[in-house]
Length: 237
Image 1 (cartoon, helix red, strand yellow):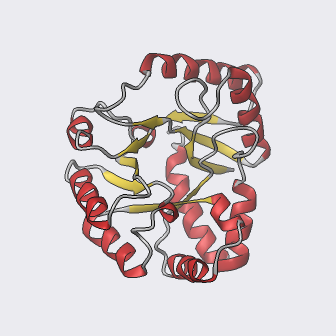
Image 2: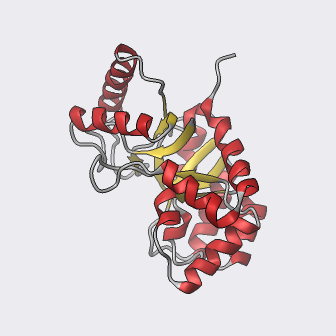
Image 3: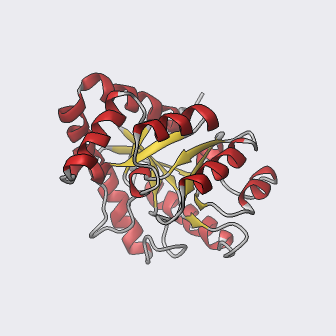
């Protein structure tokens, strides 16, 4: 069973699922797609927009109730996709930003227009809090388009890299494909996730994404990513 560390499955809190019925369909789709663990990562913009925490917690519990009542082989954990702001490091230190399943990893998002220097400064500040930053859907940021840049981000700031499964399935332009080849062949990608937002249009595709990963880059690379994702399955012990 796969672990999905980036999902907007909880309804009524961001631009993901809008209604409970949509969450239900997304949970069912996740199970069909071979996913056994989901970390729910609604969008947060620390210090700028107030996150509806009470609504999230209520809807999260209702989603868990549905899973339990229907004996689904699926577990949910809470987290957040954090759009970096200057308030992010302070709020992380204060424990006011959810990490991925209450782990030491925090999923950080940037604007596509952010410069490399801004991203570097942000990652330095996040890692300075003692947490490990995971760059959400790194392939979306034009400022990070060279292998040397990725190597530096990972080595200097203890940064992890997440790529969307859908990006492995889509046909990429030549130079983008070469960038992806180098990323995976050098082991610079840590996690594959769905970043699912809705039942229709941006649904789950973890199985197809992992199949594409195996086909393009081989079993060893796929297994290495799966082992890292297994950390977030949080087995009972």
